[in-house]
Amino acid sequence: MPGNLKGALLALLSMGIYSTHDVIIKFLGAGYPALQILFFSALLSFPPIAILLLRDPTHGTLLPRSPFWVTLRSVCIVNSGICGFYAFSVLPLAQVYSILFASPLIITILSVPLLGERVGLARGAAVAVGLMGVLVVLRPGYVELSLGHFAAMLAACTSALAAVSVRRLGRSERTVILILWPIIGNFILTGLSLGLAYRPMAGMDLALTGLIALLGLLAGFLLIQAYQAGEAANVAPMQYSQMLWAIGYGWLLFDEHPDSATLTGAALIIGSGLFILMRERSGASRLRPVTEARLRSETVTAPRPNLLRRLLRRE
Image 1: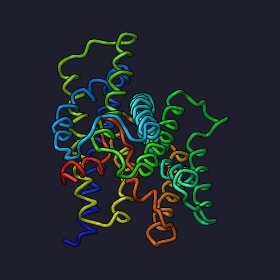
Image 2: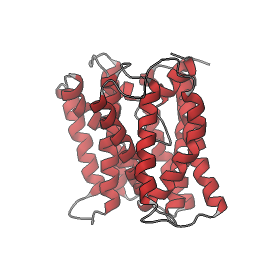
Image 3: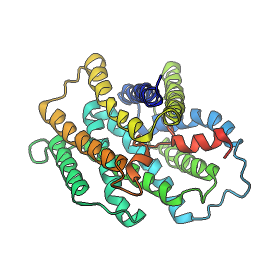
């Protein structure tokens, strides 16, 4: 099987598993606070991640060399997880994905001041079209916007900033620091929230939070295999297949039917994101921040695949 085809198929499988991960979040969100779900999911994901962290061959302390960027990235990842979990709990799946798909557009914007990237007229126009797509999905003034919409937008923004931050850091920081600091921050913040809003969990529901953790790691490992098999520019667009999963899962499990505005806005966002990826693939962009960001939002239950790959390869 050609490498690019294999990579694309592995990425499609990975995105299907990520979508199942998100569906379980939505299912549990109907009965439990989003922060509680995130706390237990992250808690149950820590043992396998800890085993991987022990493979880190580099020596040093847990103090970062660039405390500002590490702290900023950690805050962004924790916020992305909290906002993403909440958005999936209260909004239709297709709407959440449509908004989260704006992350590559935001990465393109942030790459100018933070990575020294140059955004030409064509990519600038693509970003503008994509942001118009976000407005089509949200329809401010015609549809009452909820806290869930705000949370999804904030998740997209902070996820993009986290992706650009890790590109800015490069390999200057130990992998264990980049993975562990967000986990610690998440435990502190979501753990404190349990004292404000906690609902006792049935055994099956607690097991589902563990399944969220398992699926996040499994999807990450499959995505690693996908990028090893195929070129990033061929693998990255498979992110958008999650919209198909969202429509299917939403229709089968939650009686959700995306309206024409959501589908139109999603088409504009996805189209602009694909255009930016194609521009980066053609060499029009020297730094390729979107392609190298791997697109899928990083959270404490779904760590950045590149960081997991470092540990697996003992780099």
